[in-house]
Amino acid sequence: MARSLPRIFARTLALALLFLPVALFLGCATEKDVVGQAIVLVDRGRYAEAEATLERRLRDHPEDIQARRLLIRVFGLAGDLGRARQETEVLTRELGPGSPVPSIELGHALELAHRYDEALALYDRAAELAPRDPLGPKTGGVRSAHWGENELARPRLEEALRRDSRDAQTWHALGLVCLNLRDFHAADWAYRSGLVADPRSVENHIGLATLALVQEQPDAALREYDAVLAERPNRTDALLGRSLALIELRRFDEAAATLAEAEKRGGDRAVIAKQRRLVSALRTGVKLEH
Image 1 (tube, rainbow, N blue to C red):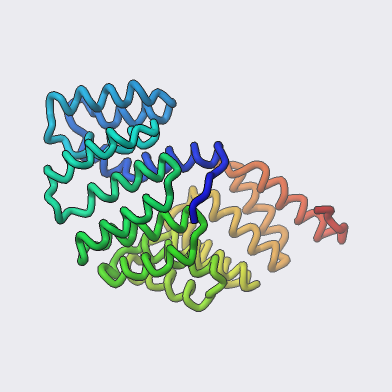
Image 2: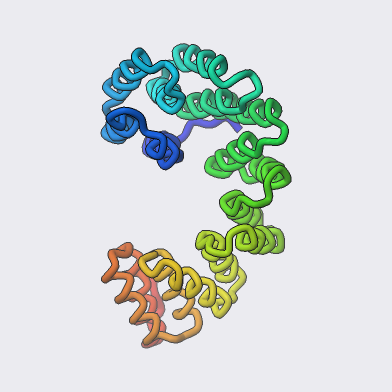
């Protein structure tokens, strides 16, 4: 599985990892929102300043778990794995040897340093340390899926759901993995299970819509996109999916109106233009060049 990602994708992955728990970090933000400030600095590529900000915070408040967790990731982003491990040891003393969090944070640091096999081993270690906690297998499964390693992701996500079947996000991740593996029956089951866990989970509706389009069932896809838009009318990805389903159904006027709405709401211009060309070609019988 070991690989070297392209520079641009690796950069995107690094920032995605740091921003994955933003809600948690900002929800627990400490004095003067230091963690939030550090996240902004990382987003701007000012890693040394982010590191210094977090270290100052920890000198005054060594009990700040959220700041220490983010600092471990910043060290990983900077490639300073020695210091990442040192901070992980401190975090283990703070949280106790049975907590999965230190292993997960060091795993993130290793992943940010592009050491994916070692990162996955630490996510699995987190799963072993806390055999009832879904965090370890969920993290290993979600991250494996991001790497495109669907065969590795599936059993980890299934284990996370065995531990907690109420997590709609994990069901969605499993559905996507099964879809990528072309196991359409399992993907459908996962997405529908996610909606049982949380009937307002729009991502699982989008998953069902995508599955329907792959299976050439545009009418079913349209129902799912309409369910999303009833809950989140500003979701431009759902509007663009809806227009595509309408194009497949040859309902061109409705598709054009949906594309106009997507454009009004700031949807992807390239996708809108492509779909408009498709509508025009299908109406006139002109064959599009790929």
